[in-house]
Image (cartoon, rainbow, N blue to C red; front, side, top):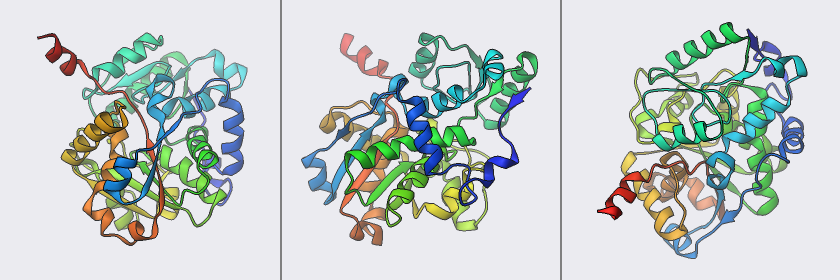
Length: 323
């Protein structure tokens, strides 16, 4: 059974699983296989928020989400022997065999199948997904590509931050969706290495606020249940992502599902971009009273928002138009 998650991963750099060097290596490794996604802005939304916002649109990434970055880096870092055995993951949207819980967007399943992925169903919880992934590893000898708690995954996701700060160097605050912590860990490690004074804020749904609770408690908190429209933000922090979130994420903004839907609507109507709930949560955080009443709001001027994905099921809309 193959896996690359070992204790040595957590001793790199300043004790974190990845660093600016591994992230730059990832950028070179995955460059032929991923898009350099665009930055969008809107004067109308800037006026509403009272700040300049720069939307890093990973919704335009291959497969419709940032995850291809970490997946590509993990896969292309395998040696020939590992690669010959195949890979397995239990993330929600990736271009390799995938294990999905009972709560899902139909379009995500369609995307996995369209790219040749093999979907095996699990119950809608992390324990079930991990158990089935282990079983497939045992049966096939495949290497586990962890969706967030892996140094190669974190390094790949950190390339989002490199691109963003190349495109808009003056950004002083970055807002990132948080779930298992792979994306925000990579973003924070890269951004703080480039600009130690930059502010990293996480955006999290109220119905899955384990990261906010973990920050408050000073240890990883796992919830008995989660309940949020943001189906991509239901995972819990891992032992490799938690130290980065604990040390380098300046604050976590918690928003409810209604705020997320309002942000999706604003993205669609104003930015003209279809964004999934997990991708819209950064905008929801910026619009929230919690943020506007914080010192971070008053100290921020140019805010980068990671729009993590655009895999939203629009069949209800299309069905209504056909009537």
